[in-house]
Length: 74
Image 1 (cartoon, rainbow, N blue to C red):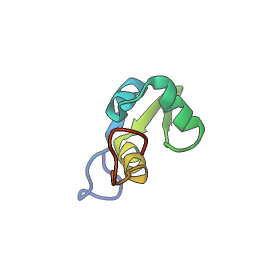
Image 2: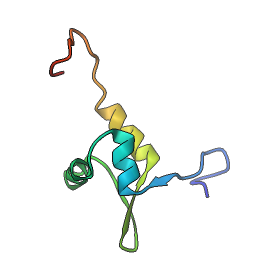
Image 3: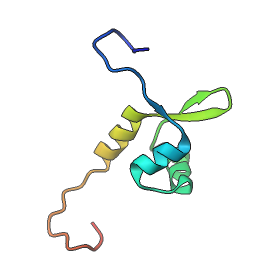
Image 4: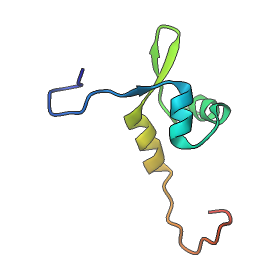
């Protein structure tokens, strides 16, 4: 299954556990980010899934340069 043609990669949907693991955060934190509309979800019936591209976009939006970082807050 592809979006708009054969050139694009197929969808990869993650469940909550796998999405949280991919981000290195807990399920509760993931749920908070969803509630804050920072990460999009795909609803299939009652199931919630996460498109890997939305996870990657969230990572890109939150990427910070580590200038002067010595292990403390960024």
